[in-house]
Image 1 (cartoon, helix red, strand yellow):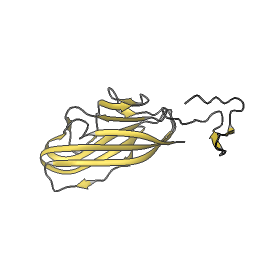
Image 2: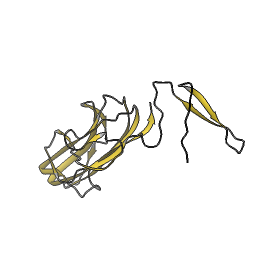
Image 3: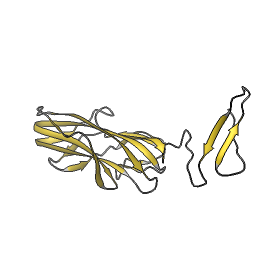
Image 4: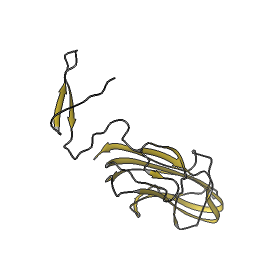
Length: 182
């Protein structure tokens, strides 16, 4: 497939006429807008590659330090463990934690923080399993493409040693994918 080069106005509709007599119209945003093409829609998936100890009753950032992929280098897996997309739009954010408690586990929850503040809560699950369990959260979140960032925290209540146990990418993960531009 070749390249499509458009000359002229910076906005409006451009009509292409293929040989089979149908019309295909591509509408481009104004000069300040963003045209989404395959390759510039940020997405990432990361997981923690070691157990993480959690203090009971405290919101704790989940340190997903290993990237499976990061299509636009927007996830910091070394310092802040946050997703900072550089394209404004709506993002599907997903997370999972796998909690192991020696005994006395009662609650687990995932919380997505936006710009350092609690923003979206997953299910607040109370369980009868004193040894822990797996918990997920998912949310659609708008990010402005310049200053907004998303982090994943967990809140666990229990006694004894509470850890986010790891079995590679299957147990604890944090992911995002752009759904559409703003």
